[in-house]
Image (cartoon, rainbow, N blue to C red; front, side):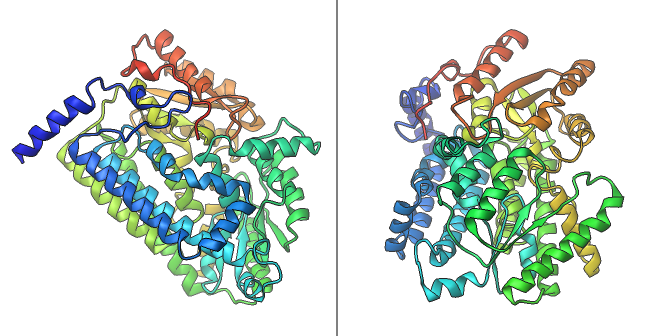
Length: 528
């Protein structure tokens, strides 16, 4: 062991002499020139998980190579998945110890699940297999749901596959490749639709206009997200996709008990709709099992929160919030996801028990509002450049109420509550008091000493109450850094612009110098 320690020290002196991250980044793209040195043990582990990722990708790509190549040529957004290894490297930037191990396990599970879903999508895709009887047979048992609706309702239909319709063509490409939304947003504007709406529904509308959604499924549950962009894209998608659809009219003010009876009625109506189009009967036993697994997934998340409340938060960064969104939306109630959670928690608990903190933390930040898709590794930059660790993120808090599985009615009540507190609903659409009051509670719970407030310039709802946050922080004496972003559109607010907002705040308000000066100003506009 002593010999390994000596070797580690010598290699670190040779390979990481300056400790300046920008020295290994390509000019203009910030893509790594070579793999990051993290010490002998962590570098070896990181490389092994990188190799494991390639194994997952090859296991998917090779057996159905003709179909996958056809999909890449048919869909513009599929090209962006070719950059996933580089994307995962960015999400693990600067990580060592339990942070690194948790991130790699989360991301590789995500890769395994997504590639498996690709097999289902492309096997059934009417664009790739026009007139195929086999594809049509598969589609009879595929339930499509809006990406903002968790797939848990599908656990009651164990003979069917529930797929988040926009997740794989829109959401994941937007975090993998920052420029992926631009073409589709431009197409949306060329067709005369308003340019001042959120890029998320704009991206969806552009995909529908370009006919770039895979044509799958026998029916679709849509969302009633109450914003102008969402209403616009729902109408366009409904016309272009041509599936029987039913909007799930979820109450917005989810704190009010009087709306829950209506919410449960909506769940029952959705179940009847799916039964009608799949020919299946809702299986309450299978649904109960899915709810119980989801409860355990949430309990695993509560354990991570408890660890992040300590002085050595082990589970932070982009991989944490991205995995939580995917788990909450796409793999809720999945045993494999729960197994991954338990494996990751064991890794994290061991580090906390030893009292080890392998990263330099100057500040414990609460990250509020929706994160920026086109800068998914922003959290990593905050920590590496300024020592700001994101111990709690708003996007990480949704859908965390446990479901009572004692009766059919209580399960439907829990399902309705989960949908009301899902992504881009729990806080941003739950009433200003939810988003406003919860911020100060989480600031205290996670022992924060500053707030990073995203100013998503195209979101009119949150923009309307931005002044309340500024007043609240001032009254409480809390340092709050406002970072402009446009969710999925890098042409209006770039990654460099976002970093600039933080740099100005840290230098002029906090009076601090960066941990790594080379990361203050660099160019990555051409990056994936």
